[in-house]
Length: 110
Image (cartoon, rainbow, N blue to C red; front, side, top):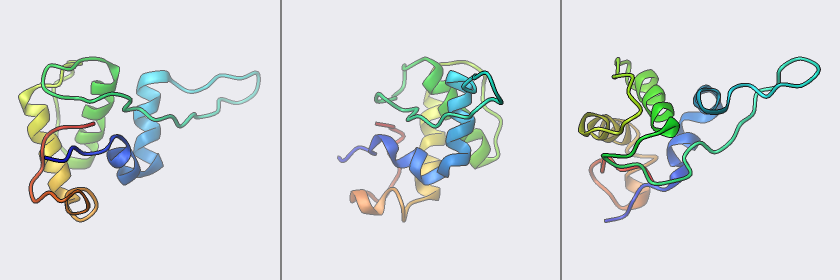
């Protein structure tokens, strides 16, 4: 089975949500003048059930915003998180699943 590539979710959701998620992880870049937002790839590793960390929190924030749901505030990728990832993948099937030869969400972020 093909795995979803790392940047598909962040590219799919655009810079707005990526900026929100990046701010969760790294915060706004501080300078001597006004703060400057930084846009960095937030998913640098595969995320599956059992993964934990700030990148999982960023993913949950994106899922919450995209799916209009309230998620737990833990930094752990749970079975519920995987189910929500599947919903997001299926919501954007044309952009995510079909190009990767999939017909259903995997719940896996790579």
